[in-house]
Length: 294
Image 1 (tube, one colour):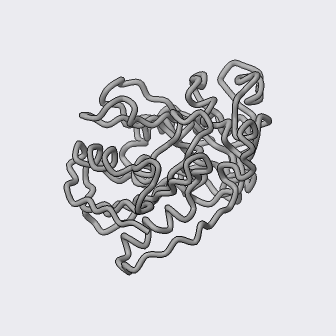
Image 2 (tube, one colour):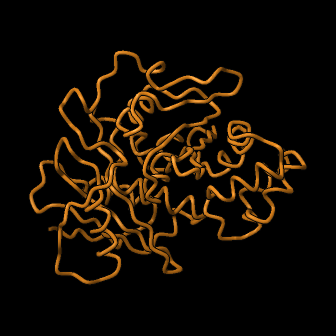
């Protein structure tokens, strides 16, 4: 079992430990449960869907990176597929607070990058802030997304964000998590660059059309890809670097062990990810950063 889960594991019930042990004992546990695994864990632990999501929150929070706040938040996103995706807040020393990632953003993006089609619910151990409510308002789940908090009845995003402003107000019909392929091509065949291109081609940027993707290579040669997730309110948009860092962290990779990075974006975009990407990666100790344009 990954070391980060040891403390949280001790808080789980004996029946849940027994049910999860075959899954989580693997060092390559991807911080998610497939629908089939969920079915088996529920059967063996006696928990229903909502009870299981709540019970998993300590494990999700164990994935948090909090050198600034020392305040761990966990989230579980349930996909329409039945899969469960972990999320946690992520902070990076030496960077502005705007570069941090909220737990709900992390869980949503984790599901999106694993090609989940839509989300049914988000379970979180603390009330979603306004930033996260607006971020989730971009989803194709719509205002009917269920939000579960400990000790409270289930609510919908509409109840947490009444009179919301979102993509429909701007006549946007392609929503976050809808399948897209922008069809960009580049000449470079390098694997890392092609991974970043794939991120750009599946990115969500209907307001600026500044599609972009980032790919990170860690010291052991593993590659993690991120896509830009734009928001109708602009500020809650999640940069592609943060999305890639989510996948690295959910895979238990040290975000300070990035060996090389590539950003792929348009030649003359109305906005660029380059300066923020380069500055944040430099703070994480990565200086081998390349920008490739289509």
